[in-house]
Amino acid sequence: MLYKPASWKTNEDIVREWDAIAVQRLDQIDSGRDSSFTNILAPMMLRAVSEGVQSSVLDLGCGSGTLTEMMAERATRVTGVDPSSKNIELATQHHSPPNVNYVCATAEAFNNEMSVGFDVVVANMVLMDVVDLAGFLGAAFRNLNPGGRFFATIANPDLWPEYWGYESAPWFDRRSETPIEGPFVISEERSKLVTTHIHRPVRSYREAFAAIGFEETNIVELLAPSLSSLDNDVPEMLPRFLFISAVRSGFEPGV
Ligand SMILES: C[S@@+](CC[C@H](N)C(=O)[O-])C[C@H]1O[C@@H](n2cnc3c(N)ncnc32)[C@H](O)[C@@H]1O
Image (cartoon, rainbow, N blue to C red; front, side, top):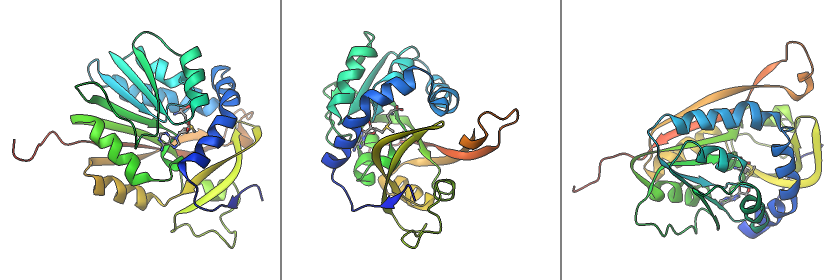
């Protein structure tokens, strides 16, 4: 079994994992070897960000900044926030056009020093790695201008357990929130380094978005080839990811 249950971790524990894997992730993404990032996730996010007029974007959990820089071609300014100092260092070195700035902080602790909020907040493949989901979503909401949109992608919790073989493990209950450790895997490449994700049923995400005050929360499946069929002429397509969009209502009480 590649995956095993873990204790609930602190943000410091999570940051140590992402610091350790940062150089490897930058290389996987920028070389195009992370085919899900290149072919599915980044195009989806770029389409979403490009829907509005030129806008300001907050990239929460920006990692080593590849997507942050791509979004900067479609936005007036982009701020990338990540608590992993190694990722912020790499992002600053490799993906720093003039309209991007990076801040090393958790989303929860991020303090926007500008006098205005953001039109769009994104979190690409971050929410399932976040310990305090309510705190993270609260930060996304707080930093959005009224009427602003939040876009996120996550690994599909309805597929992941079966896909990675722990669905029938005695410790696993798909209805509960469970921290799980395992090797970081992209297209046929398995890292020796371990990261933690939190299994949360889709219902938990819906409830968390509603509790924060997001409206029009919409969750759609993104199809991607299964890793075992990548080289097939006709790959097997599975709903490996979810795309979540939500709106911070333009209605301000008392205005
Ligand atoms: C799978 S990586 C995704 C990185 C990037 N968004 C991308 O598309 O390559 C998850 C990132 O979430 C960050 N992260 C974890 N907890 C966080 C938190 N509370 N606030 C902001 N970022 C967090 C990690 O440091 C890591 O860089």
